[in-house]
Image (tube, rainbow over all chains, first blue to last red; front, top):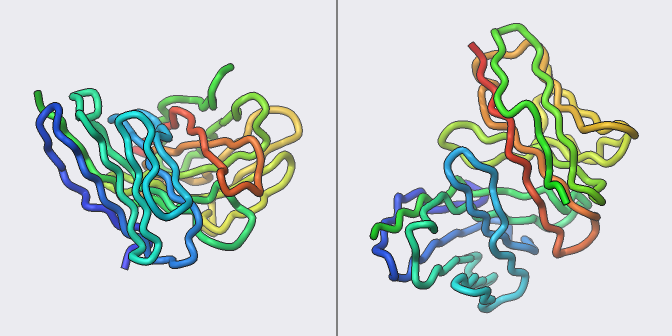
Length: 114
Length: 116
């Protein structure tokens, strides 16, 4: 079982719709959860992070965390063609002092079509 | 404020040669992480360094790979005697401090290594 698992997609949504990206993780002690966006050939860019159960909203983005179900999701409202990218879920596991040591999922490719 | 700077952007090596990848962290950042992204795979942690110290190298292959972050100058990821399987995008990331739950990584633009 992969430590961080994402549906690789591609996920295709029409412009203006809500895109829902999902991620599950295996380490129950995981502390912090991150969503990165990566355009083709570019570097990952942090768009959201969440530590507590529940929802966290930032503009058109909402991250949702359910530690009991070991599940984290990202909702993108009013999707735009510029949102088309690969979305990477990353988890920082419990323990240790390497706080930047993240375990990434393989990414979900999102395509927003006009 | 310049971001994380990596060079070269693209590096081509023949099998058996050495590859040196450089990373200068963001201004004010003293923690450097190297990640590797193989085709069709997610980012994989390789090594975590602070100035003059390797803190965590649990993701580094046991042979041919080494990393350093000297007191002066950029962090270097060195791959000796490269093989085709080393072809990947190598990303460097930096962070301002360690020990915080809200530790955030800022990634450089990466070095695409191609081994012929």
